[in-house]
Every structure is written in C-alpha cells, then in structure tokens.
Amino acid sequence: MKRKFFIQIFSVALLFISSLSLFGQNSVRPLAKKLYEIKQHARSTGKFDKLFNESTQNSRSKAISEVVSNAQLLTLNSDNLAELIKGNNEVLELTIPFNGRPVTVEMFQKSVFSDGFTYQTSSTFDKKFTISGSKFYRGIVKGNENAIVAMSFFQ
Image 1 (cartoon, helix red, strand yellow):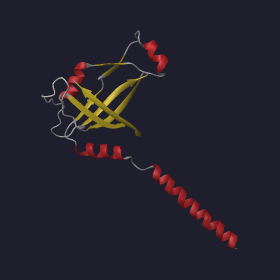
Image 2: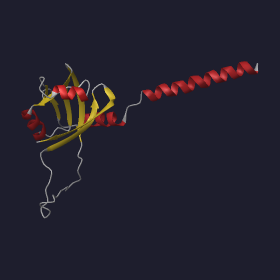
Image 3: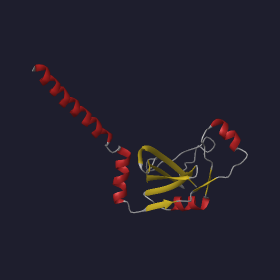
C-alpha cells in the first residue's frame, strides 16, 4: 500500500517537474521581447532587401575558403547604405543573401555612445571630434529569437 502511494506521488512530482521544464523552453528571450515592444511603438521602420548582394567569386575566395568553411562573400550597395544612415529608422528589417537563400534580421536602433561623446587623437589632442554618419542596431534573426544580431553602419 505504501509502495503504491509512493509511486503515485513520485509520478505526480515527475510530471510537475517535466511540465515546468517545457514551460521554460517557451519563454521569450529578453532581446526578442524588447524588439517586439519597440516594434509596437516605432514611428519609423525601414526594410532593406538590397543592402548586400552576393559577390561573384574573386581571387581572394580561395584563400578565404582555406580558413573559413561555408563563407559567403558580399558586396555593399553604397546608395542603400547612404539611405539607411540618412533615415531615422527605429526598427530595421534587413535581408542578407547567404548561400542562395535570404536571411532576414530584425533589429532596433541602439545608441552605443553617451550624449555629448567626443574623442581626441594623439596628433590633434587639443581638438575634440564627434562621431557622425553612423547607426548601430541590435536584434535577432527573424524566426529564431536565439540568434542574436548586432550591426554597425558607417558612412
């Protein structure tokens, strides 16, 4: 009798623990949650399908393939880059070609510098410079919230 009761209690406890484990697998990652919240209130969203194009094979591709397997060379469309930097897109959806298939990333704009940030160089230590013509984004691969993406764009 005690043995049967023990098996029933053990079975219920095991079922409870396994259901908690499954529930934890379905939780939304913090970065994906933040992206979703920003997308709900974003004033401007940009979609760029042709920022990068698949590069044709060149003389460096053999050297690259010796170091990296499954690499994809891309060329940057400078007109689309200028449009991206000029725009004030809070949310960015960017499609990148990879081995003949498009990979879409969803990102939100994030400032990496504090307000009033300046820098100096050793040759002109008496002059202060500011960063301009740059955008910083972070987010996820669309459809895979475990794949984190961060991109910086400079003019």
